[in-house]
Length: 436
Image 1: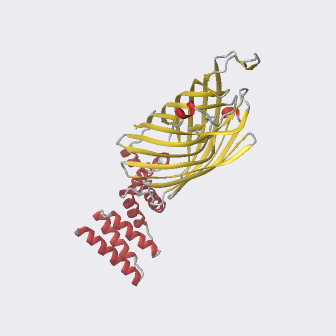
Image 2: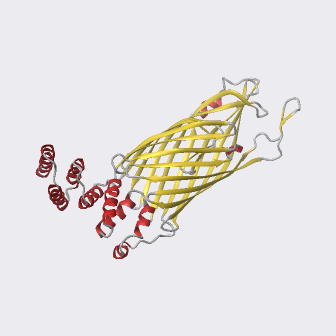
């Protein structure tokens, strides 16, 4: 209680002094130095803010506030203060060391690698930075299921005679990813994903419902190369190759009067798609902005996508991060906008992220091409929650999302009708990343 009381009294005194007369360099220097020696980081930060309000700033104030922000786990604010101090005096080993670790712990790992080359040799020897062949491994599993599958399989009250609709039962994703720091300025990440698919084709003939389940398999190989351009600019180029097949439930099917309608001699239908794109990002002290563009041929449609996304760091740390994006998508002759947004909050031990996606989401690319919405059915909205737990050498992830889906009926000869059917789809997500 005594320490807390002294802090409050000191701050009140400081504010009162400021209101009565200009704060002097000597007062700020002696007060912040005393708080630095006492390791009273929160009070030091408050005094430093008051000094800035009086337009008073100097080298050692940058150093002390940078270290105080670092100790208070506000790494982005620490980067800002320490970069200013480094600009004024790039020989200070203490500033170099704290700035290096502030880059790393704020997520700007490549920036820390670039800065490492500028550091003094004794400090390089102390840190002894070595780039492993593999810096992290992640394993993930995602289970997608149609919440309304049972009710949809039983009846279709909106279907006319000979109407057909295709809807999923479940998808199972299994993925493994490896991260490779190729050099201090280049990072390479790639991921292999296997997916098993269970679908259902439903036909309405003479008021009778016929369900034909059929299976599918899909493989995705994703690769992303990140280039650090300096001054917290980054360029990503990415590629996602998708290939798969599913059972042909309409092999050699004929009408009752003998006329062929969907004749096929193959028991499976194969497909192959490619996504290629790039993005450029700028990480500032209180925001990270990204502009992206990609092209693809998902589901045999020529698709172009571009957009802007931003993550904000209002507290100068990664503990509270609102984020959002707007994406323009053009495929064949159609175009639309897709909106995303959410909020991540957490501590050093865990984080919780809530998010939502809204728009006509089909053949859609997100997360720098790492995730693809390539279902034939359209996602009109998606809401989700993801929990991450941070241990010393790993990150454990668990999440849940719910999506509203929309698709069209079609005729027996694959002509798309204007009638729409809807269903809900949920995703269960688990994963773990090991860092080396």
